[in-house]
Image 1: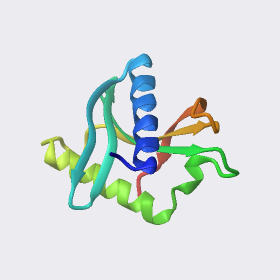
Image 2: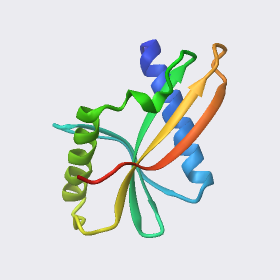
Image 3: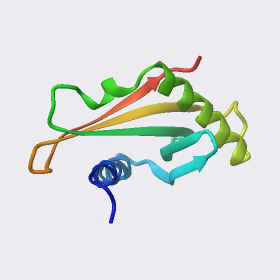
Image 4: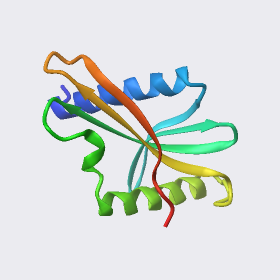
Length: 123
């Protein structure tokens, strides 16, 4: 049985994937892993590859997107390049890293889902 944290993360990723589909994105893959880590969602829209980091929180005083620090930012950039190489895509293809922040109330209902485009800029 998955842990409560894993279940919370899965709920957020499912909501984020549904949000992207409604917004016209084509989902390429979920939970892509390599030795450097994991990319939650990879999608495509208008010829641009969009790497998505999903952050989900239940209640609390901190917004989910505030949990992404400098180390995570660097890791996300490295993962984006690793994915492009793995998929045989040129690093010159247009791409970006978005964050989708998902907040839930204590009953588990989504109270906020916000996509933050270009949340992690290129170095």
